[in-house]
Length: 255
Image 1 (cartoon, one colour):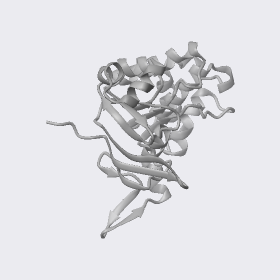
Image 2 (spheres, one colour):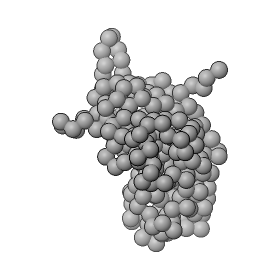
Image 3 (cartoon, one colour):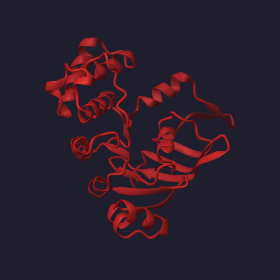
């Protein structure tokens, strides 16, 4: 019996003006899977993640999370774009961690995690603070909850961003090259946090250039090029025995 799909994309396209960024993406993720996306800069990886989280609208194809079409309702034979309230409700189901940490500089780590719970979920400040401390503890930052971003290392700031996303109880976690802005010696602490999430069964879609992480933690690896997935499969198959010449050429430069 096949697992239900958390995420399913079929023929997804996206253009910015005359430039077509996504040319027909087909992609699936089942609950509890870690799906890694690799590929050269400009291949459409981040744009696809932003479409998935409804931060960008896609032009054609279908994109669904838990069977729900992203961005549109279908009624009486027509598609209707979601209201701002519907977009906000949907985005709260998907945790998004960006390359940059996007923390509020004037707030402590605890306040950065708690503020969305108060503003978006309407949770009272005391309960939000308790939940924030719980999530910071999970990412190893309980002793740094009082510090502001400038008092934290880049790796610590990114872990605060992960805690903030987790506090919203997301169904899927999206990571857009979460270690690319970090000094090399800080990368491992973020990857270790992500490994723990994977072990706990969190569904994750990870755009990454960390091939070791993709091999160790990923259930699937998807190679993007020119706006589409060129090759997809088990990590060892794609990374150690790629079938497509374009995948071989890319991996020869990064492995």
